[in-house]
Length: 97
Image 1 (cartoon, rainbow, N blue to C red):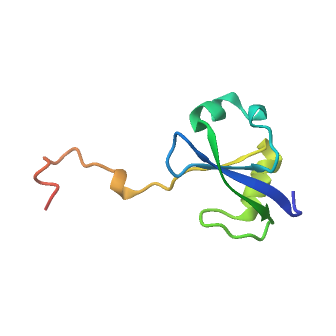
Image 2: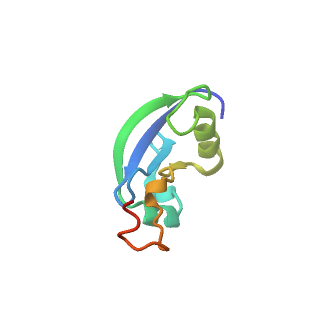
């Protein structure tokens, strides 16, 4: 997929900072059951014209278009953050130092 493609972006109703990119008009029920179950109800975020050259915050237009061509969707998950890591070896009062 190399040409301009109209893409719809939806955010997950279950997972924070999780988005799915699909061709505009994609039928939700045609996507894999496991994906739909984990993602929850899609909440429309925006529509845009995607080109391979387009730069996005966490990916590129080429990656989005390749994934849509291959499996009909591109799933964007949140970036891992060191804030989620808890050091269980220390007592709570030690972690405040």
